[in-house]
Image (cartoon, rainbow, N blue to C red; front, side, top):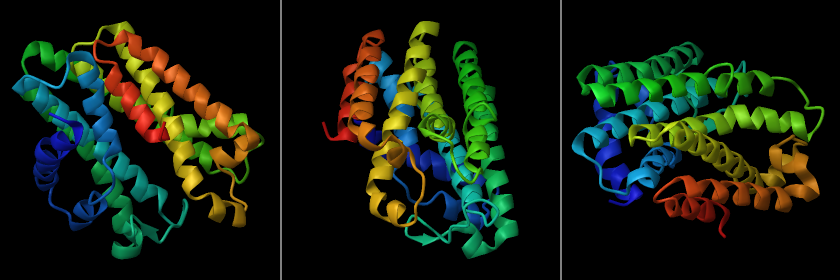
Length: 277
């Protein structure tokens, strides 16, 4: 099964089930509607790299739940990132942001519900899993927690609240945490669920981090003209003339990690597609 097919036939139906079970708050459905689902795809690719595209029903179910948890965490970060006390963005994904559509108080609670919901999904999956898979789900959940907290995504948002970055290194640290950490968790969780050992799991985590940095470069490039007009500091503008060399460095480092996986070419292809190589 290809990743796009897995997203449409397995992930999205499971996501809708979980959203209903979390209480059916309208703003929660609104916040999770749309997007490219890249992080859930990374969960799938992390597993695919380990054991190919044929998963047992139990592993496939666990992958879907972990992908949903990742997507809920990501949606939470967007809702809170758009709040007036943060970036104060009125639009997200071509429509009103959650606080603009539902009010600031509900947006705050919506983000909280999404984050809490991610761990409800994971714990529920552990309750019904067999012992060996239960342990893998526990490791995957621990990784997600670490990459979501102050050592990861939330820590990156803390850094992003400062008015200016002193240099490219400081801005890169923010991007590694705010963007790279959740990609690290996604790829690592998929590999862990497919039976990766410690070395393989670490390689998947590092691949996800590199993919996240390359993703941010690509995203910044798309907004370059507007960012220059607004004199906004981004990962792309901070690197300046070093963008091309940094992109190649990320690609080379990522490809070097694929040797740890029986089906590592799927990760190489994903990175190539991102950078249009």
